Image 1 (cartoon, rainbow, N blue to C red):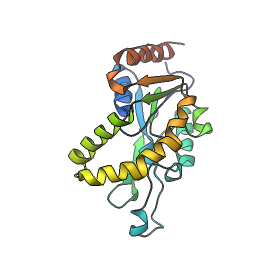
Image 2 (cartoon, helix red, strand yellow):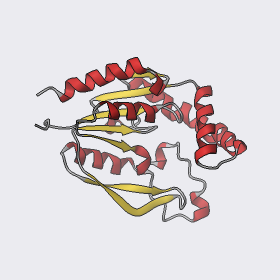
Image 3 (spheres, rainbow, N blue to C red):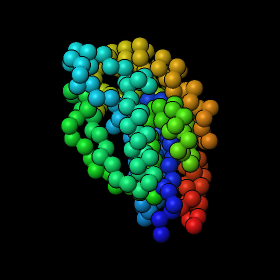
Image 4 (cartoon, rainbow, N blue to C red):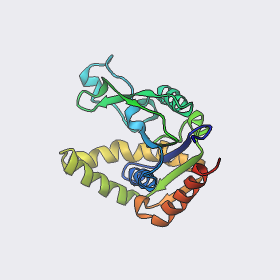
Length: 209
């Protein structure tokens, strides 16, 4: 029997912190339950009004890069057990795609992204707020490995972007949201004790009728 409303878990942390690993670990802990993941990255703003050259200068680590109003509206719909048309971002064209993905509501929603705790309206909807706290040096190593292996980028370009945009935005906008977290998880998905404790907490929500 479904609960009165879904459980909303916010998972945040800097790029390369392991927040996606934590989100997947929670997701995989409940294979027999109605559970979904919602990525903040799907909600980058539509930039079709800008030239391609202007789009190339987008700072994806700044709060202004996100269509937070649409994200909040969609989360509120899901909390009412209503389906949404989730946007798709086209990283080649640097704007929102015309395509959408139908997302049916679930009993547990894991909302993951670098700035999901930055907006009070979003925080107020959450049952559990998590911050994945990982040292800067580990995060840059993970980012270099990911961007070179998965995105075909050069070492110099990854380092330049990290130093000029990613790191300053992290310290200005992302790290300060740590104070809103209910739970701070060091070292992300490798922290099995924290994930087991969290899964137990989520289980109490699911089993509470």
